[in-house]
Image (cartoon, rainbow, N blue to C red; front, side):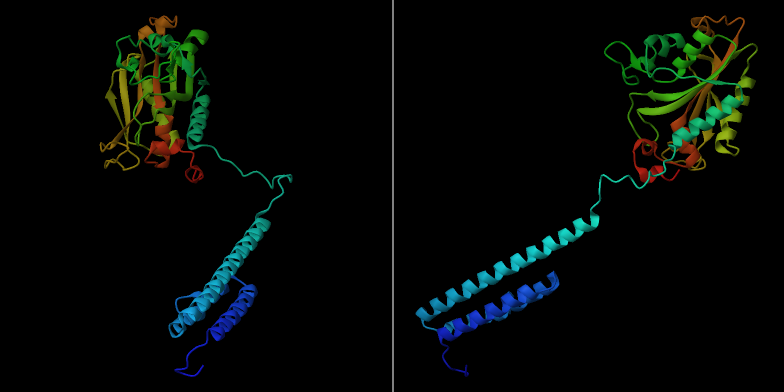
Length: 350
């Protein structure tokens, strides 16, 4: 059309129809989403060829403008519908390709099992069991749901002792409880086997306490006992040093502090210098540089009597060790909660 010449609505409508037909062919021939989007921008974009026709409407009469506008809107709707349909077609094709690539026959045998590994706490437990077995100790087990007698009374823990408080113990509706330590296994061992006795009792225990980086409500312990004639603190120290050297494969700095435990007399707290921070202070050792690791002592005469053993003829030592906390020290783990997290990325490191 010559410059300045008045446009004819029939000419515009014919040009719109031609653009629509050509664009539909381009849409059908598009090979991918990128090419389809380029066509959309070229025709329907703000500066697209279809949009340019509206600039000529101002030169038309009202009747011609109405007719041309209907043609323009119809073409726009037709092209938008064609774009959407082709876009959905590309999406369906991509999905079919993905399903075909990811398809598996569930009736086929598995390609093979992934090799597993022992939990770090289990590794520590088995090492301790092997060590004490070589020293003539038996490995005993007992129920996790215990009676009040075996968990407290037979261990010389009086009714008013704080360990019986609900803040520490999970009590059950039938009067039993979830064991707070594996010491009840020691009681059952003395009752059934009698002296002389060398035994350890590894297992899971439960404490109703707040969880943090160094405390869990469910964790693992190993408790040991030796009942024989003429047992002294020297025997206790020897076995504890043997234990720590075997577990850490190196010399560790320890300290022995007096400690009160109803089931031993005298009682001690054996601490080790924190292996996480080297004694400098961290969240595991609560900035003290030391970790309480091994409560121990000579078996209280009342505990022996409750199990039918004459304390005038027999004596012994007992100790308790947190397996989970020991694993933290062994492997340099700074948060006890990781062991029960179920995170395979963490467990595969061991």
